[in-house]
Amino acid sequence: MCKLFVSFCMAGVIAAFSSCASTKYVTVPVEAIDGEWNIVEIEGTAVVPAPGQEFPYIAFDVESGKVSGNAGCNRIIGSFDVHAKPGVIDLSALGTTRMMCPDMTVERNVLAALGKVKKYRKLEDGSIALCISSRHPALILQKRKAATVTLESLEGKWMIQEAAGEAIPDTLENRPFIEFNVAERKVHGQTGCNLVNGGFQTDAAKATSISFPQLAATMMACPDMAVESRVLGALNAVRSFGRLANGNMGLYDETGALMLVLVKE
Image 1 (cartoon, rainbow, N blue to C red):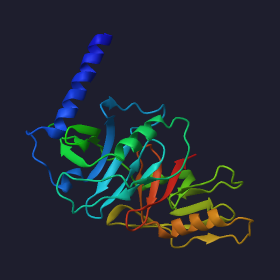
Image 2: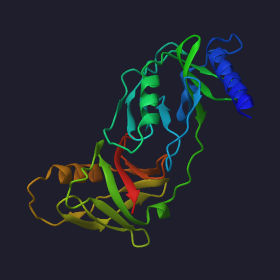
Image 3: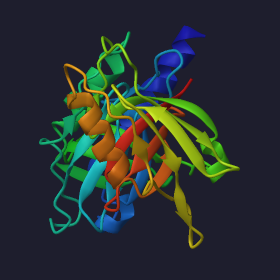
């Protein structure tokens, strides 16, 4: 059993290594990597997500040149040159948010491999190899299936885990949250010091559109208003929502930048 498993893994590694250099594959244009991709292999080793976590993923937007995703714990943030020669990509300047998770092993491996990537190739099965060199794949990506999300998916109370790219401190006395009443188009929440109430609006032409133009807050003053200011600024910028890889909810601004990460209570 063990010998069989090892043989299978080695065969997969050999196939992956040859994929970056193989003459069978024509270098594909940058449009081929557009969208969201699960990271399923790192330098020849299959990715095994930590208990309770999904596969790390990376997303490329070929219109804006933005890179996003999740490395296993923290969000990936950055950009790439969409005008580079086809098959060439440099991901060494990507950044992440700065949360700590119980197991950071997968994340460390993902980030180390991404920092070495210089090329990309499309494989016969439709997956993508991000390569360190012409003979060395750093990561293997498989296309993610789009998560089904509707306005009703927002129903209920959500803790705000991140606002404007920064994690909400665990030491905060009043943990920020937002609660949706979808039927009545109302929201209620806590922004770190004050309570907020109001409604939300949607656009019938876009199923995942949402904005909060009519929020009213109480007027208390707290010793530290930095988190509240960040949360309120993020809420004012929100224009759409979507499901994140780990099942949490993301609220985005008009450019597609992730403004808030919500975790269902």
